[in-house]
Image 1 (tube, rainbow, N blue to C red):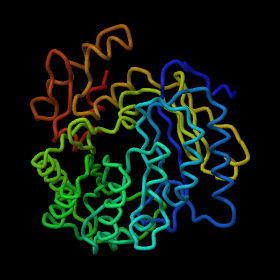
Image 2 (cartoon, rainbow, N blue to C red):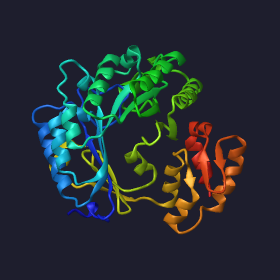
Image 3 (cartoon, rainbow, N blue to C red):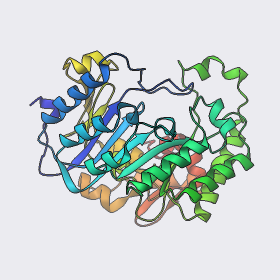
Length: 373
């Protein structure tokens, strides 16, 4: 067994599987993906199964991310799942694209993946307004999203997460409200709402001056509107960009924010196991050929733990910090909250420090200020 995969096999960890295939790349996307050809999918699936078989870990969360995992088909998803040693209550999430799963002659078999153990679906809605979806390069419209959701529920999977994007071209308060209302009426249990970030190297970056984008203040208004409307619909904000009905938080993503262990397999996938971070290069042939992951150093130190915890609405819980590191939260961090509290950017009490909604809007600056010691 490769040394990177060593760890405490008695405690279940998370498993992330990167599926780097898409029918076409969205103009804002910076994730590693390519359009498949020839036998690349079957070779890649075999490589994933090979690497899964190398580890003795038991997994209590599994997450198929991408790319577009649904692009490889239900048979391949089921094949990969059959190699994974999972707990009985494992949360197993599959990301789907409605253009693959919501058309009348869709090839995707939700019943098959449900039988394989997939019990949570994450779908890229981005917007429930077709003109906005088109401007984002999304294939398929809201009709396909609705059809996909019906198929998912018919297969017995009711834990559905939808992604929204804020600050996209031509977005308005009214169009955002329609998207949020669509999420609620569709029965989604979880909603992720991300602000559009123009990444260097993407088509959006190359023509950013030509895009009809809202300014920073308007995008912040969209964020506050989202928080407010989702709360009215019963969705609790538990992280900067994530909201859920009671009991439907993403257990896998919480592992990241609680600085817990997870193994990432696939080209560009990152891992945190036994206090070490490592990752695979963004090269699909290297992964297929068994090239080892790259050592990314140690992880899970106090600063990293604090930074990740402050992304959560519960914030940095003192008791949890002390249990992990054997001492109390540094007093200087508590002192640093005083100025921030005056500006309503943080909440602090005897048990925790957390960011307010306004603090989330400038989280990088707030967290940097708290860690200035």
